[in-house]
Length: 202
Length: 202
Image 1 (cartoon, chains in turn purple, blue):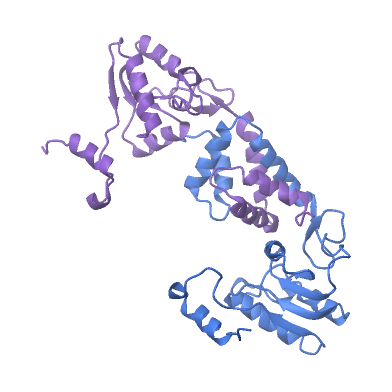
Image 2: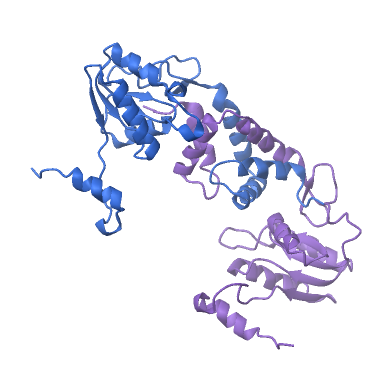
């Protein structure tokens, strides 16, 4: 016999499908929503319903944009520097780059990484579209900002090869010790990369 | 200039209002929902909308029940033992008790705890209704299963006093060392309660 009424159990099941949310957290959230007297549940439901219907994809860089807008705010901004395209995996990565305040160029969102295990090949990503942009002379430099993971590295390597025949500089974000970290606790690979990439103090 | 389109930002804001979900987790969830091609977002939205409209409160024990049903499944179940009422703070606690499989009686959900700091007094809880059930001779034993916290203890003490004049046994869940724990890491209070509540090995 079910102890919880179906509407509560349904919400718990749906919440537990979110990444990083297990059944315990899901039921805590469901009971919180049940108890909350304000409009939080309704606000969430509305935002969820709107999420996909009110958003689209930028036809240039494949970042998220408002539905009906062909170009995202960054591609449409004439004040952004042309000539440099930062290639990232996900829209979230654009956000991370923007937060640094250190990049004023254009973006290209691959919408994933190459992953043979998950069956994601070059055609599943926006790679052809990136090559197209390079062929059109849109960039002098391509910054490969895929994650410093195995998949991210493999994707960067693949992109490097695809762009070999074009007169474009292809760079990759530096590896090294994170700012504020401790040498003692750095993992072997990071320390090795930091050593290999050491720079002259000027 | 906003980097994220409003629909995405709205969802992040709503998610970040949930307990234990900060802005970073909220945006990770939002982007996951955006990317997920299946109906997860819709399923969540539907479950959220239904949550309050499709649920009600049991008129006997104040646990959650389906809208339109006067009694919850436990109160309506003739196979549950009458005579013992387990008093808990929240519907979630009923679930926790049920999972043990060790209790076959009835419940009473207070819908909170006494908390002078938050301005929650006896009239804000289902205390009067519990006393009414005892007065009607519904129980021979009341198990006070409020949390072993300051508020839970204060509430249990208050309930004990309210029930003094009735011929009913009032018990409280045992304190002691959690099963599988380590004496070395037990906090002082828990160890003190475990010592005070020590039992004869038979």
